[in-house]
Length: 92
Image: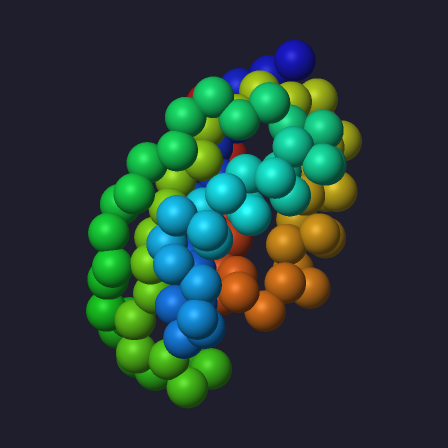
């Protein structure tokens, strides 16, 4: 297993709270096969330009352990979730 970080920008236009969204994203990562070890709230940030009719997003950093093939599975699962605005993965 390797250590990874995922930066996920959440769309906060829905009715869910930040805690509910964080729990849902952690659950999706776990379903893909990741072992989430830490979640950090980076904060709400304004975008440099409007993106998909949004001016800002909630940035969350997820640290997890996983096999390399889990990244593709997690990326595909979160790509179809409309609560996720952007996602970026990197090995630690």
